[in-house]
Image 1: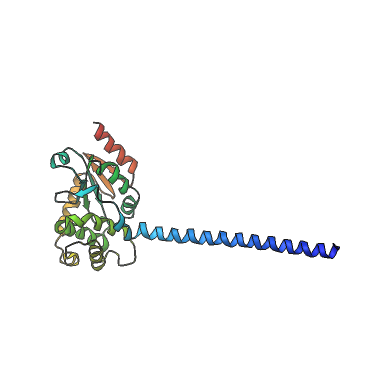
Image 2: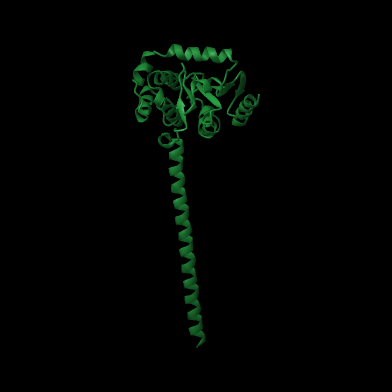
Length: 243
C-alpha cells in the first residue's frame, strides 16, 4: 500500500472515531435533557398542588375538636386521650412553616401520628399580617368546621401553593384549593364575611398564653419548640414518650 493510501486510510479512521465521539456526546446531552425534564416534573409534583393528590392518608384521620386535629387512623377515643399532644401554631403565609410542611411534616405524620404516639393539632394564626395570612387563617377555620374529612388535604395543598403567584392567598384562589380537594364549604364567602375572624383571634390569644410569638412553633405537652427544627420536635416528643 502506498504512503498516500495509508494516509487516506488513517484519515478515514480518525473520521470514524470522531463520529463515535460525537454520538457519545449527543447521547450524554440527551441523557442530561431527560434528567432535567424529570427534575422539573418532580418539582411540580412536590411543590405544587398535585402532590396533595398522591400523599398517603390511609394511616391517619381527622379527629374531633374545635381546631384541626390529626390522629392515627384506628385510634380510639381512649387512646387519643393518652397520646402526646403536639400543638402546631402556624401561618399559611410563613415561609418557614411551608418549609416544615414540605420537609418535616411527612416524617412526623408517619413516625409519630400514624403510629398512635401523637395527637397533632393545628392553630392557624395571621402573624405575618398580610391579606394572604388573614384569608388563609380564616379559611382554615371554615374548612375545618364544615368538612373535617377534607381539611388536611386542603391544608397541605394551600401550603404547597404559598407564593405561587401574586394572588395565591386571595379568596378565589383559596376557594379553588377547596374545590380541588373536594371541600364541601363556601370558603370564599366565609373569608369575605369575616365569619371566622374570632377563631383566628382566639388562636393568637392561645399562642400568647403558650409563650409563642413566632411561627412555626410547637407546644408539646407544655414544652415550646420554636422554628423549623424537626430534630428538636422529635426530642421533645421522645422525652414525653419516655417519661
